[in-house]
Every structure is written in C-alpha cells, then in structure tokens.
Image (cartoon, rainbow, N blue to C red):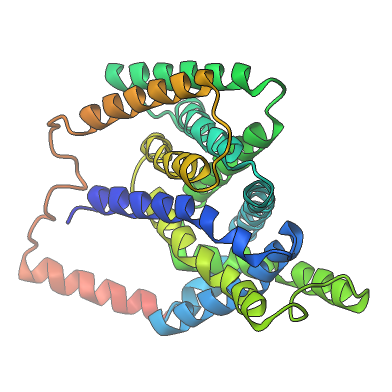
Amino acid sequence: MSVARQGVLFGVAAYLLWGLSALYWPLVEPTGAVEILALRVLWSPVAVGILVLALGRRRQVAAIVRRPRDLALLALAGLLTSVNWALFIWATMNGHVVDAALGYFITPLVSITLGVALLGERLRAGQWAAIGLGAAAVAVLTVAHGGFPWIALSLAATFGAYGLIKKRVGVGAVEGLMVETAVLFPFAVVYTVVLQASGQATFGHISVANTLLGVGSGFVMMAPMLLFGAATTRIPLSLVGMLQFIEPVVQFLIGVLVFREVMPAARWAAFALLWVALAVLTAEGLRTRSPTSADRPAPRRSSRSSRTASSDVRDQEARP
C-alpha cells in the first residue's frame, strides 16, 4: 500500500473514532470536563509509553527531546489539543454536540486555508467548489445559531492550528504524542492533587464504574491521536482538512439521533449543503490521477549500491 493511501486510511479511522467519542464523555458524569481532561493527560503518557516500549521507540523520543524547536512546537501542540478537548468534552456533556459538530465542520476550512496560505498547497477546481459549498453551509449554520458561535469557532481554531504544527514538526505519530502528553503531565498532576486535597474531586469517590471510565479517558483518545499524527505526516494538510468532515457528520448524527438536540429547518438545510460538499470532495478524490512518487515502487539498486547504503546506515547508527 502506498504512503498516501496509508495516510488517507489513518485519517478516516481517526475521525470516525473522534466522532464516536461524543458517546463516551457523558458516561463519566458527574466528573467535570476539566477533571476529565486532567485524567486524560495523566493516563495518556502511560498508554503511549507502553506503546513506545513495545515498538522500541525510546531513542526517537529522546532525539525529539534534544531538539528545542521540535520540543517547543510539540508542547504548543499539546496545549492546543488540551484546550480543544476540554471544550469538546464540556460541549458533549452540556447538550452542545451539534455546536461541536459545527466547529469541526469549520475546522477543514481552517486547515485548508492554512495549508494553502502557509505551506503552498494547491487545490483543484472541484475541491475549491466543495470548499465553497462547505463555507456556505457554515454560514447558514452560523446565522441559524442565533449568536456568536464561540464553541464552534474555538474548536475550529485550536484544532486547525494543532494540525498545522503536527505537519510542520513531521515526527512519528507515537513519538510525537508521547512528547505532547509528557510535557503536560506535571500540570495535570498538580491540578489533580489540588482537586483531591480540596475535596472537590470526583475521581475515585463516586463509583467503581466512574473510576474505570476516568482511567479509560486516556486510552480512549490514544488511538485517534496516533492515527491523526500518522495521517498528517503522510498526506497534504489540505487533504487532512477534507477528511475532517467525517468527524462532524458522526457527531451531528449522534447529537440529533441519540441526544435528541433541537434541529431547526435552517440547520437541516445547511446540513444538506454539507452533504453535497462531501459528495463533491469524494468524487474529486476518486478521480484518476497520475501516480505520485509515493505511489511508485522504489527503484531497484545494484548489489554494490545496496552494500554501500547498508554500510552508510551502520556508520550512522554507530555515531552518538
């Protein structure tokens, strides 16, 4: 399978899992959104750390820590995704799943704009048409919202910026997520200790089921974060942005069909526009394109060049 196709599959899986996670967080009540986020930050390094050890990635993680630029960018990425998830969890626990879906419908527009403006990525005419339909749908949803959609816009801005940072850093998915969560780990420990000492914590004080769900918060988010990180290093950011439509579709359906949130006619009309946009994007993605370098098989090397390359690799591994 080509690298590009792997990236698409990773992205689709990540967004499906993220969309379905809207069903998980209400189960953790009465634990609040910030406490859930702290638990996620506490347990995520444990889950990812096990994966790092199992895959033998300790050297790669140590190499990232020794690069100040990458360490700073991943710390910022960790902060952005934490803000994003705190707001998303709060929204799902307070009857705003559709508002969260609106935010993640806007996010692809933010990602595509960043990809074109900052990374020089190019879009085809059909893709621009799809983005125009998406923008029109978002405009209708914003008007129907009846006020400034701060939940949606905050979610879009934080996650769009997070995707850009992951693209620019370009480290492995497992190693990057390990650094992101480890940087925030001390802050989560301090917050949890203060909460427990003040008697305001719910974790460990409600029921066994609530405690297990709190522990599971770190593991629930590990899989989609790893898949997302793997996708951003394999495909253009503009394509990552287009795949992001999957998540809000799932969230929207959960909000309407499971949580029975109110849906005025204007929102239904906007949702129809978004489906048209998705159909256009799908048709554009299925168009036959000439093979890219990622799709072509690697050229065969002579036995002499293979021996030389192997010698170079051994020399590099011997260096400190």
